[in-house]
Amino acid sequence: MDKSRLCIHTITTRPWSIEQAMDKYAEAGIGGITVWRQSLEGRDPEKIGEQLRSRNLSIVSLCRGGFFPALVAADREKAIEENRAAIREAAALGAPMVVLVCGATPGQSLEESRKQIADGIAAVLPTAEDYKIKLAIEPLHPMYAGDRSAVNTMASANDICQKIHHPLVGIAVDVYHVWWDPNLAEQIGIAADRSRLFAFHVCDWLVPTKDFLNDRGLMGEGCIDIPGIRRMVDATGFNGFHEVEIFSDRWWATDQDEFLARIQTAYREHC
Amino acid sequence: MDKSRLCIHTITTRPWSIEQAMDKYAEAGIGGITVWRQSLEGRDPEKIGEQLRSRNLSIVSLCRGGFFPALVAADREKAIEENRAAIREAAALGAPMVVLVCGATPGQSLEESRKQIADGIAAVLPTAEDYKIKLAIEPLHPMYAGDRSAVNTMASANDICQKIHHPLVGIAVDVYHVWWDPNLAEQIGIAADRSRLFAFHVCDWLVPTKDFLNDRGLMGEGCIDIPGIRRMVDATGFNGFHEVEIFSDRWWATDQDEFLARIQTAYREHC
Image (cartoon, rainbow over all chains, first blue to last red; front, side, top):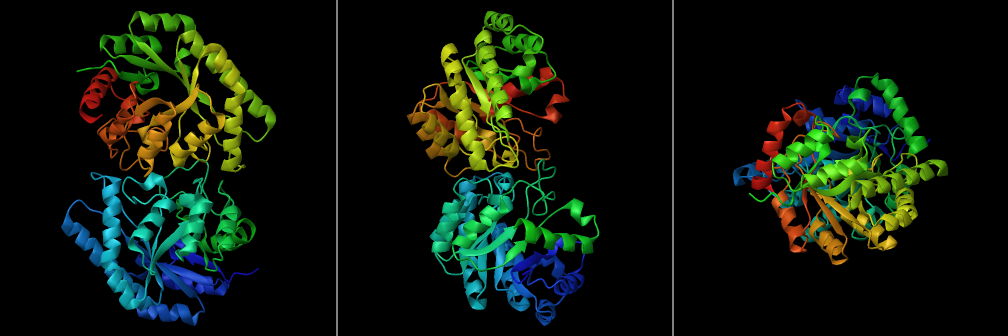
């Protein structure tokens, strides 16, 4: 089984520290790791980066920046500073990319939030250029439009990319957020044509889903046609990682060694 | 305060029987009522229709038909029969329209479900023609794409309408389902241009939302720009009812007389 393009997000095995996660992923022969910022708390990112590379783990991205919109300018400025910090952290770690959960603010229109998102990304771009770090806009499912992201479709993410028009700004496609979209294939094609298809995340949508945040399924447990979406992505020539990003109170409560084994089986059978 | 275009769905005040609801709505001077089928259980729809009209309540629609997709043909045929029954019930009640929650089936693609939805609507159309009952496709929020509706955007509803192309087939716009859509104004315009804007439902999106089904907000409690969407709808010349449709365990647990008073205040201030 080829695991060279399999990547796991540290949040997927949240009960493990980054040290445990890197050992376990490497032992299993998994090709890549995406590091969540909270995994780095109290650590030196440069040292963690060295440890990851010495285990032959490709550092795929740092999760996450974003959350640009806010009602007052001072808060937007704070968010911009925080994103610059994330970019520097990615550089220290040796991650080529920061994933952006763009943000939304109740009390202002989604249009205004989208404008603030574009402005925020533009404001951090010089820092991204300094460190050559890519910024991947992750469109979030419309159920997060209230307070997590005003960018809820691939089309909307493509629009913002088009507006900013910079080779370091692209899109992270997560099947969980976009699987329902009738225009998905077309919009993935547009992103790829413009060299903006930066990342591909997988998990599954459970029926029923019981929690808005932490009830994602392992691939094969839900109703997303993951191989179908992967074919759309593959058809564009995408040769990046398949990143497993699962938030699940249910899976986090289980033995993580067994979970890691199941992730690999699910990757083979349902991706 | 003009309540002539205010309509309330019986499910909004679920603790009340249809008899209680009709007395309370009429006393309050509310113009219209949308009847949920479960309110009619054990009643003669014709008699209920007479009682509603004698109280000067316009019967706006019957909720709901739909749920067309299924893995096996026999189940799809059963759904079609059930929709014919709903149409006959609407006719007996004197409701000019049946609202459709179109359905989705885990285990088949959304494309296939959409095809089955179009086929199902086409199959019940002769019955709708016999009774002159309109069928209103209600696009549902993408968070219901797993098992409640494969029609998740106005564009998708417009596509199905275009395919069927019949004056009795149109769209019910519910702000809860479509508020996040960057193409909303455009798609509402398209629907109206083709005389397909059949209904307009209001409620609000709470931040955070805690339950996938029964945690809707009263207008003004959440983050939807309801006046903004109403302006889009008004701009098309729509002159139908503003239908209050709230599923809320929280509100259902309160005194319904007080809730009805609050609905009227919220309608005046936030719609």
